[in-house]
Image 1 (cartoon, helix red, strand yellow):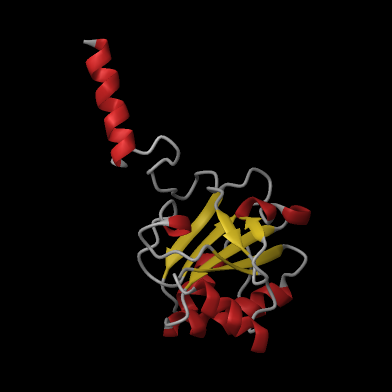
Image 2 (cartoon, rainbow, N blue to C red):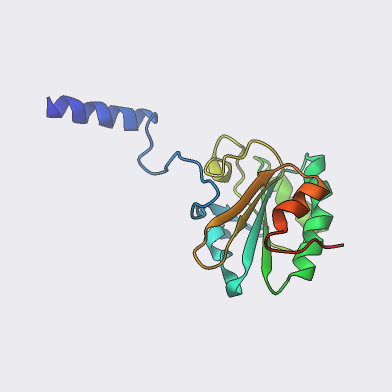
Length: 174
């Protein structure tokens, strides 16, 4: 009986229907952030954990994609917060797309962000998007610096909503 059960589990793992490596549960507000492997614009490996809690700052992770108008609309507001609260807030962009080479090529000619921008070269059904339950762009995740817990998480961009989500930690920027 035990051999048959073990054989069944091994068959499922080999078929890829059960993953022994990655948990499938999505993080929520109150959970510790989930570390993901990413690449910077030079192709070097990077991890989200490289940015969490730096210098005792909150981290705002901005998940976006290049063909998202609301993502692009959010950039100036995110930049205002990053500048005004530079002593308390770090920002990291995570570009979700399977066009990793195109994303890196874009950066040779134009660097639209004052913050690090990373990618895993994958879409919504795999990679960094999965543990964060990304279904809409942009998605914002605010991580507190001490324990790396998620204190806010929301999708979409409207100025008043962005400011309301940030306000418990950062006064609105005008």
